[in-house]
Structures are given as C-alpha cells and as structure tokens.
Image (cartoon, rainbow, N blue to C red; front, side, top):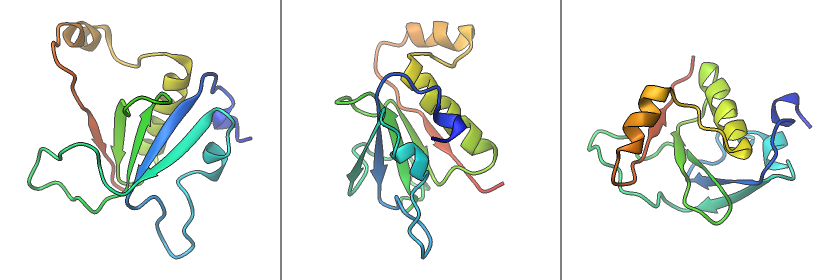
Length: 126
C-alpha cells in the first residue's frame, strides 16, 4: 500500500465520471487508491449535477468524493497533478477520517448556509 493512503480509516466512495482513464494505456487515477480496502469506486456515464457555467468544459474526467451510499461531497474536475494531487490526497484522507479542512471563518459562513452547496476544483497540469 502506498504511504499516502496509509491514513485512511473509514470507508469512502469515489465516483468516476467520463474520462476515468486517460491516455492510451488507460491507467486509473491511482491504482493503489482504487485497490485500498477502505475505498469503493463506482463509475457513472455522466455527472449527476447540472453544470452551472456555460463555459465549463464538459469533456473533462471528474472524480467525486463521498461516503458510501451518499452523494459525493466534493468533485474534482480534470486529472489532478502536482499540487492538485496533494490537495486531492488531503481531501481523500480528511474524508476518511471525518475531518473538515476549512478555516474557522469558512466553517462559520457555511454553518449559516441554509441550502446544500457544491464545490468544484478545476485542475490544470503544473
């Protein structure tokens, strides 16, 4: 098991949408993550949410992170690389450990939020 995934505790689910594999060799986002006993991966043909921006590139691969049986709480659009990979890894581990990684100011603002919100993290190669 890769060292970056050793801190996973509780089960998580990754939802992979259109573009799960890229390149000719069809390598998954992270084989060691997908093979981890705390991780379930499911594929969907398309996003389960409406893209709110007309400019948004709909052909990107997407990965949703959530708890088993729930809607993904966080979506990553595009293949995370460089610093984006570090962020993706941090979010996977935080979700598995039941931790929130937001500042107290953001947590307070979200606490006043009446409706569910979605957060998209757009990545570009670094």
